[in-house]
Image (tube, rainbow, N blue to C red; front, side, top):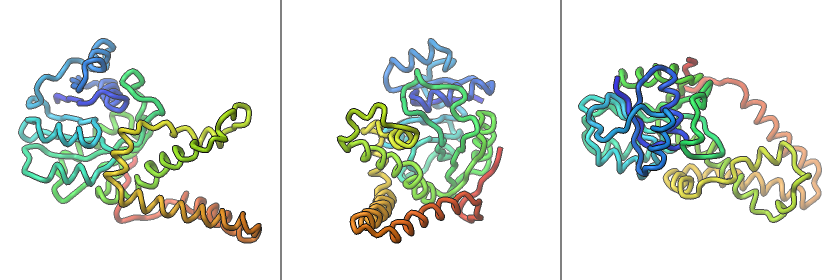
Length: 282
């Protein structure tokens, strides 16, 4: 099987390394030369892809707009598999299915990353025991999905989560995009100055993802804006309730609000049946 990975950043580079660790030969492509040269010189890829109509599988590891542009402007092998790894799925799905294609599309989203970016920070074990989300539609090719699931196991993923693009975008708005927004907003308080010696694990957890790449994440937020705005409204409402209880000195109300949050969090740890989501442990 001939595999190509397009976009050699942290995730794309790690996809290459995980596939090579599993024994596959991997070709790479990148919009700029420096990461491509680094990947080639450091054995992250086996060769440089000049054309894309000879590959059986192409992973497109680019931001949403660039991903859609690449897919729309590239000639792929008939019957081959094209898989994106974007953090929004419905927008990409709509782009892909906007016209007939000669390839089988599988939308994916690896739930792994680092606070740093770039192919120089890629690693073969980034996905070990992580989840890979696969978005399914009525147009999804079952054999293509099964191949991606097989590769996921070989790459070290611990589970595959299958759902619709709509479910993915709603969940990711809460678990990822909202978390990055809150972290970024939290550090804008100037009390952050001269905090050395005053911080512990809670501060580090809250601020770890504050330094987002604004060009990448702004695009993700806007392409999922309805879900993001709903989750922002929810957390703002909860903060306003707590603020009101503190301002009024209402200890009973404050305790009730905090207890409610703790209870909801504890209940969330219990695995529940959900017909919209299928989880496969690899």
